[in-house]
Length: 255
Image (cartoon, rainbow, N blue to C red; front, side, top):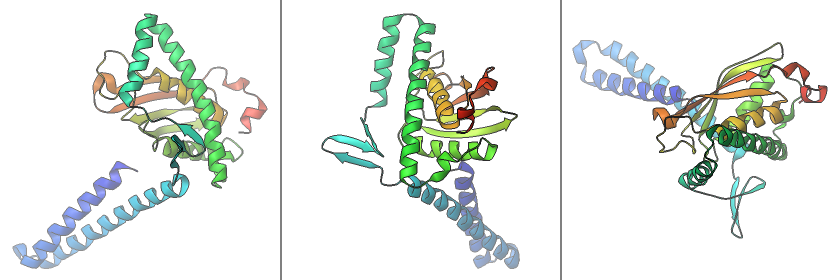
């Protein structure tokens, strides 16, 4: 859901209410002008509200009724999950970090683990969306439209699992090369953490695995902004094609 839609609905409501009040009390005698403001504000409010409801409806239609607790097992879609506190996961990772005492190596391990998880998850995502008859997840070809549609589905899915809110910004795909930015708001890895270095190496690998398995594209992912360092709730990851992108197999290109 876009923030601008919430903002527009708020502005529209304020304009509509002010216009209605000013019309009723005939402020400055400009009753007709205030009436126009009232109508305009109310129209903006309802248009924005309708857009927000469409977004919610789309998410519910695609991923609704996914969470189920069966005999002590938390099922999300077709997979078994475990609900852990964000701080618990952070504690596990920092314990390994302290034990290794080699920060570059630790981050590479996290990226490798994240990439493997991303690849596995992308397969589960495909299976669940096909089960829900969202056929666009396996649409053939690698046009910018197809790539954006698949990434949009991934962002919607993962934004409903507690990892944070994923969005894709400034995505460009030309001549078999891709670049853009993945934004993650309220990342579970950077939540309530204060560090001098980025803390989302796992997410770097995870996004790499998603792009590889879901799109058939090899990318390099680098965290350029981390909530742990800045404290504004936002982590950003720069996406760019690997130099060996041209070596992808024909099978990968058909994904």
